[in-house]
Length: 107
Image (cartoon, rainbow, N blue to C red; front, side, top):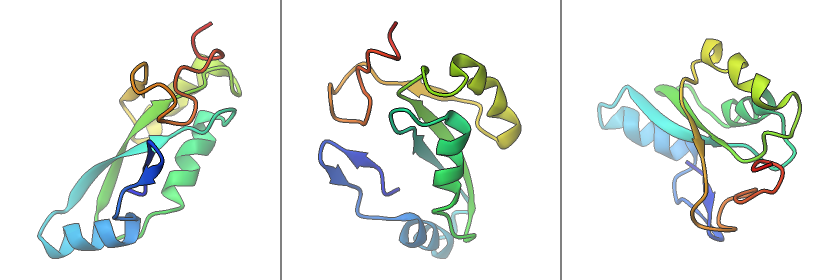
């Protein structure tokens, strides 16, 4: 929710999306956590957690755009204890997501 993509942002933010889910009887949702270029992966997760309201349980798929940030691939090991067990890399949609086709990531 609130995911930027190709110059737009989804219409639901975390408040409206999780409240709608809760009122519709959904108790858990999965959302994408997008890493900004140059951002450490744990910091990206912290940013997206900061957007949440506690209406439902939320799990994240992290979109890795810059493994050159922070400790690189070692940061992935820090995510499962935080509930993130999946990582997505983006090779399609050139320029649509921050950092997609990042030269730092693909070295």
